[in-house]
Length: 478
Image 1 (cartoon, rainbow, N blue to C red):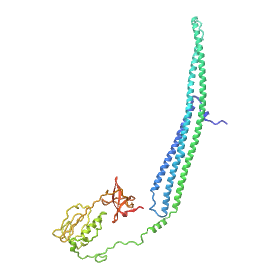
Image 2 (tube, helix red, strand yellow):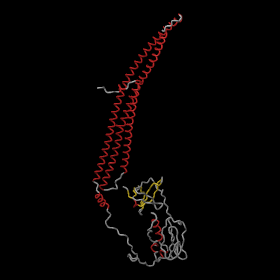
Image 3 (spheres, one colour):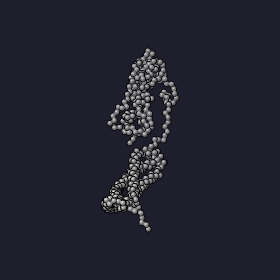
Image 4 (cartoon, helix red, strand yellow):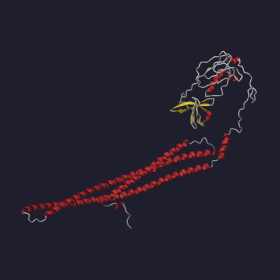
């Protein structure tokens, strides 16, 4: 049975091609090892990034709005997201320590050994090449002198005695030089032989070392890739077990139980509310009848104050306060001027009939116009919020307007909010002092008003502003 081929028996031949083939193979092995180390590095980065994103997802995933068995399943999903995130982060760290770092250390060790042997064999190769050049040069000189001696030994019968004597002297000198060249040639050949033996020994040793490095490299990479497969397999098993736990929780989820729990904890009653019915003020029934004539009492005509409710229609969340202020000045004029009430007219002109008019008018361009008194026909006019006058029988009643100013940037950012709310429905602002909010938006509340409007702070462009929004469009966060 033939012996197995080895590096030390397979890379000989002329012109030292075997060394070039070996060096190329070792460099290719180095590149492959570096590529595998890069794969480990990138996979660790991917696992780390994935773990961080899973952690962020788990933090932002809230289940507080759900109830019952589905809430339990969602809580488990959140918990498994956190578990999976930790697993991926651990895998990233394990790949870096057990695979990437060890592969880079191994690559550096092999590179150091390969470079050392490569330098030694290159030095022996250069010495052998130099001895070979010297031997060739000495051999050429030796052959040249031998040929010169042979040329002088050719008989020349017609040569004069004097020339023959000179030729003999030259021949002796040439023979001496040929003998000297022969000695130098032999010495060069011997030195070349010594250099060749040393190169051969070094090359054989280098071949054995390169074969050992290649065997170690293949065995090491096989082991690291095996470990890599085991690590990823462990992660896959962990993810599969996590999914199985989620599936087990979902099997326990009951639609009927969740609906029953919601009905038990959130019911508001079983009686259907009835719509508001019309009740006539005078007959106390649903039949409409004409009321008795109404005249303006002198006490109110003289301008005495009396209670009056604010108008039902509001164009802005703060106008209710303004309406209450106006009501304290005009008494119950709105209730007194019915269909058969005192005479009145628009724009300060006298006339018959006419209701109380438009009590409030927001952003009236005539807010600062001068107030008008009664005319000769008993009517009176007004401006500002009171755009329509009411006849009062010659008594002057003036509507004092309150100017409303709202600065959305007049608040302290250092003061903590009362609480935070989440928007349930979109709301489009209807006035300057209101906020436009979107569903899902989180708003810090800085003030609450009795009329059901709350005041919060949001970002508008690059700065914060405060404003009002309806409280029944939001829910308070715990």
